[in-house]
Length: 134
Image 1: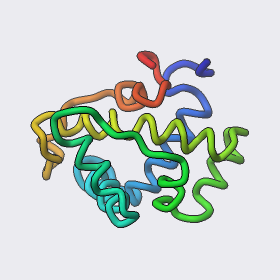
Image 2 (image 1 turned 90 degrees about the vertical axis):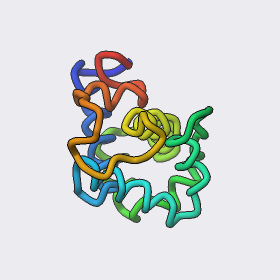
Image 3 (image 1 turned 180 degrees about the vertical axis):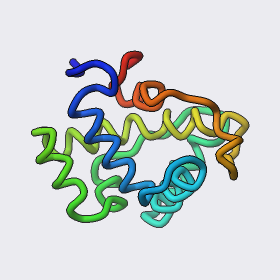
């Protein structure tokens, strides 16, 4: 059960930190592009495509995500939350498809921040089982 409400307490903050790493510290459309580029660079382009296109969103396995995450970033999140790395990666692998899908409602990734759907932080975390709606 999420602790602390809002952003899901420590787990929510830690996941946001890991997402920031995947987004190379950028927000908005640039961060989303960085995230998808990093996943594509790890050989996960077919998964990313499934999130943007119509149809079911393919999940990522912990091992697939481990290839895409900077060494050390996962260690920091695991230490901060007390969760095991596989648990964190499983949550991320289940949540990323929904998060990206929500940001690409027209079947393509937005190029400008103005094109992103308006969302509260809790809306972004709900695919991860965190936030008020999670």
